[in-house]
Image 1: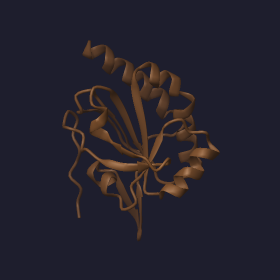
Image 2: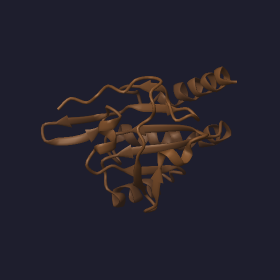
Image 3: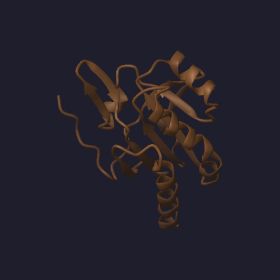
Length: 158
């Protein structure tokens, strides 16, 4: 069961998923803004916590660039609620319980029978197209790199 590779410049696959506040979030509602979608394997594991907290610490920079962040994993809403509360996450983390959205973004991994979201991220431009793809990111440095790239992409669009 192969996943279609997601390409730079293609339309970002639309999705509607529930966030940690039980609110439905639909990607296409954010057209006209820059959107960062980051997939991560599991709530409350060291790498995922590092990455989520980096996004949290950078949220003012991200908002200043008029961008929105969505974290996505296969964890359920209750798990997301705990993770979000524990780390004071100021952005939506979405529950993709069967990995359907992760799969559309070529970001579904499996380890034996366990399915999980791979640590991939995407920047989506205001037209709703994939502007940047990151595979297997390093949670320590990823957000810094992403902010630089977001600035460059925004400059290039002017």
